[in-house]
Amino acid sequence: MSEAATGEDDEVVTVNFKTTQSFLDTIDETWQGRGFNSRSEFIRYTLRDAAENPTFDRDELIALLQAEVDIDAGRTMDAETAREQFATDEDA
Picture (cartoon, rainbow, N blue to C red):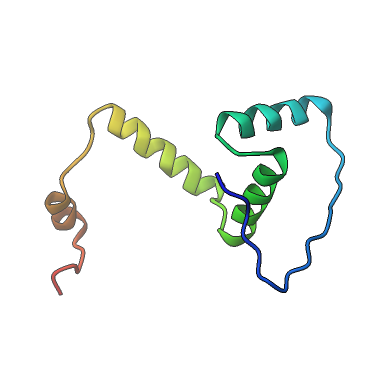
């Protein structure tokens, strides 16, 4: 992965935070396992992603989990059947 891009006029500042050693160990295992170049790059990427993208709420996460369960159990349908069943207006 590459270094996080910043605008030309952006001043780079250092931010410090406290965490437990066990959580830091988890962070280190994660960034190394995902191919980041450094802990800092991983933390910047993760914070940027959290700031720029809305998070799922609990109900959305439950719905995603249920969808995975349905897929694993073979309870799926093709797009045409879904359009008919849920009366989408795609053809309108």
